[in-house]
Image (cartoon, rainbow, N blue to C red):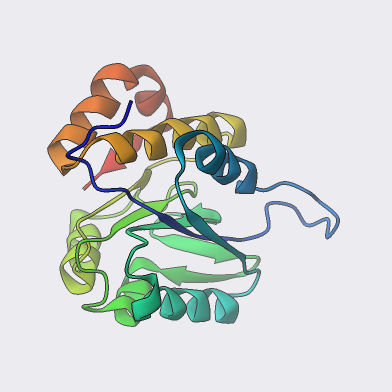
Length: 187
């Protein structure tokens, strides 16, 4: 049941390749479809496989026509403090350079292994420079099915809670076992 005080949080998703096989059907798009069909969450989905495409996708998200999309969902392979595109990568600092002062009130979720396994300075720098409301993600390598199931729950909680505190409380009280297993973090 929706909380009438919660503002709908539409999702703008950028996804990379999960497999080296070009015919692979692995994707997080089905969870977005599930959220849309059952919870009426609108989403925009883009699959970008290169760093250059990803950067263009980030820039596109900052356009005025996407103002109603308050969640930036970055679904890629990751490592400590970075998103990966095969052998290339982009750091939180590089993303902050692109998104500086352009994410006011937005939520950024890193659906990627270990990206938030970084220093408090890197996280604080990203939040302050971009102006986002908060960021979330994982501090370790996570299993695809576990993290995808968690993200389905997480995005549903975002729809029903209207503050960082309430979102954090809902996640860490109701889903603490899975959140702890995944080393999920919110800042």
